[in-house]
Image (cartoon, rainbow, N blue to C red):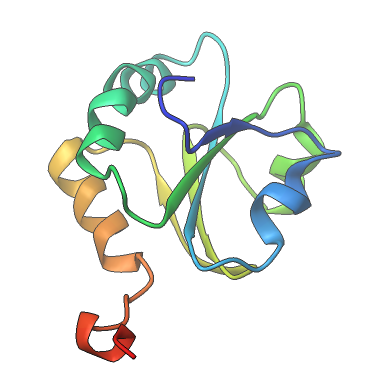
Length: 122
């Protein structure tokens, strides 16, 4: 993977990577080989993640063809589809990749709110 917060998930690892509570936004990228729109996102992903460097974020990629039961579990009907989770709760869904500004806006809108710096001081 191009970024340290990106992971490949399987049926066996999905819950641990996505649903276990943590204070970071989890974007699940359901993709498939031979999917042109999936390839467009995959090409853009390193640049997108570079802009979000340091954000409380992880991207979990799921091959929807190899792990069809996960796609079925979440009622997906097409790829690419992106599901957003925070602390084990599903926040939303994006179908397709609509370009960098849209994708970054949605992700930034859903990032966990950070405590003000003054509140962290002793």
